[in-house]
Amino acid sequence: MKKRTVLVTGGAGYIGSHTVLALQDRGWSVAVLDDLSSGHRSAVADGAAFYVGDISDSRLVLDILDRHKISAVVHFAGSLSVPESIEAPLKYYSNNTSKSRDLLAATLEGGVGTFIFSSTAATYGIPADSLVSERSIQQPINPYGWSKLMTERMLIDTAAVNPLTYGILRYFNVAGADPNGRIGQSTVGATHLIKVAVEAALGKRGHVKIFGADFPTVDGTGIRDYIHVSDLATAHVLALEHLIVSPGSPLILNCGYGHGYSVNEVLDTVDQVAGTKLSRVIAPRRPGDPPSLISDSSLLRSKLPWKPLYADLELIVSHALEWERSLTDRLS
Ligand code: UDP
Image (cartoon, rainbow, N blue to C red):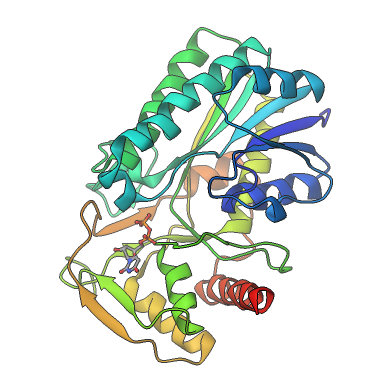
């Protein structure tokens, strides 16, 4: 396989920046396009070409594709908060759907035939089965999930009539940070549970709210499948290499470990790893939150030579905590 340059949109963001490192670690060159609306320039690995701009700026995209002889696009750029998507649906249909359409059009115009899209378990809504497979019905229950599902559809329909092979990776709950401490999640005002909990463990928040303790689950709190960001990044690189070698065989893969933890179990783990006793406040359910989402990861494991290295909640939490500490040190 000829390893050339990959365009990573959203490469200054959380998952994107870890994937840039994973790509470089496996010998790929990388160009990053990010508008820095939520990403950080400092998260982009040395050695990656960096462009500040909008994915819907076709001229800019075409210029990057041409200048770097891009052989694949890995598309992360977008908005990712379920609560925000309910408040501001049009922002989500713009950033995640409409701008993805423009990026896809430019990708085709630039003659690039491999495209990986960062999708989400939120496209399943409230699944009927406890283990969610790629064949489970997709019925989102919030604009975030719909905005991603529409882009999935767009990719599938476009690939049917164009020289394009796609990978759609549906993430479950991504957490943790680079085990070598190079990067992590720097989002300001993050809403994701593990990030919120490690911030609280370091005294940056007074308490952690538990959104709903009356779900039909083991302890009444929501259950999610937390996947380490570095294992997820590796899944992208392996998916890319699969698509390059087998251009006729697109991939749609759930990305999780196949094991769920409740909010209370996550908070217990944070207490154990950080040596804290977090103040937990029971709050109403958040609109749009399903009770349980666990990935059936068998397809990911069978289609790709993916061997997760960090499938352990304590490891995920300890990497997230180390990164959060380093952010604190940097600011003080
Ligand atoms: N959650 C919580 N308190 C928080 C953030 C999240 O109780 O401060 C719960 C949320 O209701 C869900 C789980 O933690 O059951 C994971 O939520 P998160 O926002 O991390 O990711 P999502 O599953 O919404 O993508």
